[in-house]
Amino acid sequence: MRKLLAPFVLAFALIAAPSSAETITSSAAKIQFDAPDNWKQKKDGDAITIMDKQEDVAIAFIIVDAGAVDKATEALDKQLKKTVKKLKWEKEKDVTINGLEGVSIEGDGQIDGKDVDILVLVLDTPATDKDLIVLAIGEDAKLDKHEAEVKGVFKSIKPKKK
Image 1: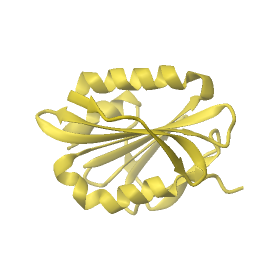
Image 2: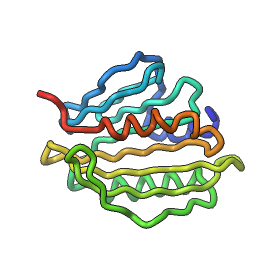
Image 3: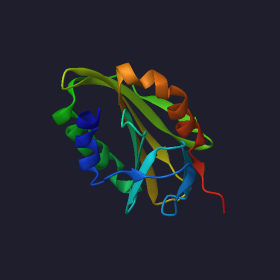
């Protein structure tokens, strides 16, 4: 899976480093989320990537200016289409996670002949000038063992405690 995730990690200029479980915060977006035990993480400016120890699943949190969301999601889609073959997106859905409103879109495709699932969230944040884009990607065959952890990360996204 490391080979499969490398383009996404490189796309955000992030190299994951080991970390213990912790609440990760973004002062710029005024949000926080919990990283699972033994997952790797790297912060680079307003971007944060976490990956499980075996690098089967990666979740990138990208903070963007509120006025730049369309441009950022177009760039993300373009990057994904370069790496993910047979990329298909489902219909966009409205979501609310711990009071943060936005949209989600699920997709699937193949990287190096292996089926992958992709989830993109775009959420309004408590910071009026910032939005949050979350990209999660993992190989289908390995996602089951991380399902509870991934759901836990998504359920933990919330406004930053003061």
